[in-house]
Image 1 (cartoon, rainbow, N blue to C red):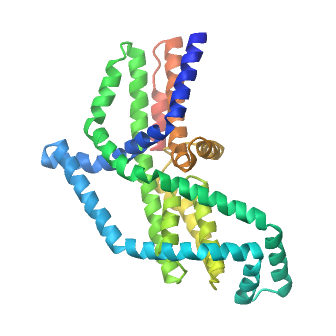
Image 2: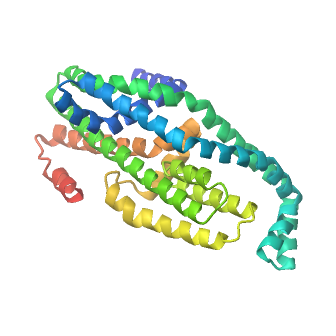
Image 3: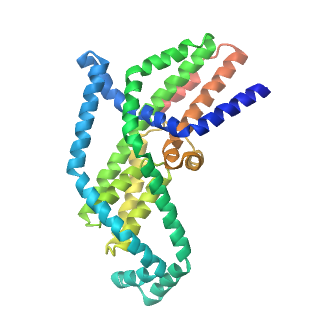
Length: 352
């Protein structure tokens, strides 16, 4: 027992030390799941998986170049302008002058303007610390830019030899019950991850297009940048949409945007549409996670691996649920003999 505990401790320590490399490989697996349907279909036409992967990557490269040529310059210009105004806005927040300006622009009562100004002045240190934390988080994300180049390259190997990896892993298990357990776990993980990645990308794309279109139509300052931020943060479970909404409303208020109330109403309506219409139809119940488990996963992922850990928290929690469910069934088979999987399949059929 002592040796087993020590081995598990060493394994966990190794995983923690190499978490940056493991995160790159996890994202590569997710990217491979995203590309896999197109590769599988094209493989039948071109009669070769390597040729299919090459064609898909070429088309993806063309799409990225077209996107950056068409939209990239505008987003870059707006981002540069917003970056230049942030120091002045931070100084006005700390001094409380922004409250007086907002009061004039939005017709606030003088009493409320003075209350807001005194609140900002009394919490100037907290505002500065919050700005520093946000800056550190942004810098942390910028340091991970190498993933945009490494992940697609690593995904090529998973797309090309993914089936061989799973077959080799199964071949190392000689016991039939253990082999069945591992095969069931791999099949469940395969279905869950494939569905999750594609559904999450679809939801993020819907949010990006809707935010960019509405903000541009309403002439909100830095509409393209804010729409892009909203689409990217849609990937972050639970806290991402809230952070995106706060960012959009804060920038609109600080830029003295007049129709901020309409903006808040739109963000609330879109959140309801995403949570109760789009997400149930697109995501379905494939994750089967309680909200408390999702929140715990997000917080724990942030502590372990920062922003990237938050991105990976929900699929990791869902994977642990799958392993636990299959292990419980495996333990029952060992204890009581052959056990039918009818209840599990019935549940899966009902869920589908």
